[in-house]
Image 1 (cartoon, one colour):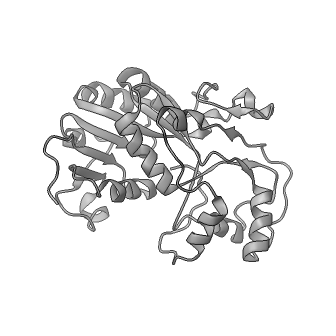
Image 2 (cartoon, helix red, strand yellow; image 1 turned 180 degrees about the vertical axis):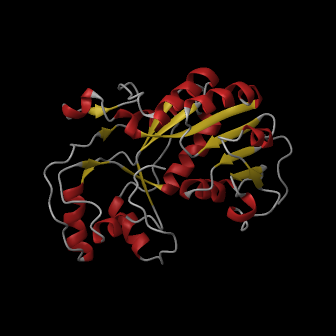
Length: 278
């Protein structure tokens, strides 16, 4: 299928877990797509050479590979700030739209957490986190659209395996999760409809306690309960009203346990990770 000649090139910076899913979803369209890696000849050997793009945020000599007037989705932490500032000055004027996958950890010091209240896009940010500093700089300077993403799961990134391997203790800590398919769809929706300079929280919209998830996992999949811990942070309740009302997003996987059932039925071919970021 030929690419649309009138549509801007979509550049996905980063070939990690989420970047690959965005690429697969976007490939169904007729637009030109480029997928980047620091080592495209090795990391992108499974995609056509016409799609491959060499890019490294810490190597300015690679920045010219981004086509003029491209729409760009960045899937990795934008840091350190010195490189981010230089990138914004050199490449920013050539970018048509910019979406950054940030992390909801930006809210970890918000006072709403200790009060048990919902965290929104208006909650205070922890600018001492390098990636958050970079995200906010690009949002202010380039009108970047920042998606503050909660814990990502999906095929090859199965929370049930985190429990099986004892990587998460039994506790009342609140966790917010989003299926990688939902995140990828939200990224493309943000490119098409997001307002420049805005931030949107991305989650399935249902905060859960790890203890509740583990209780269901024990009954439904006979997974032994991990050792309990009480000295954990309370976690946060991330509100996603803005994503749904402003961008019109409808969550594809609102039921965590139905999604986990589907993942359990698939063979796991991607290394498991307990990292709740990108």
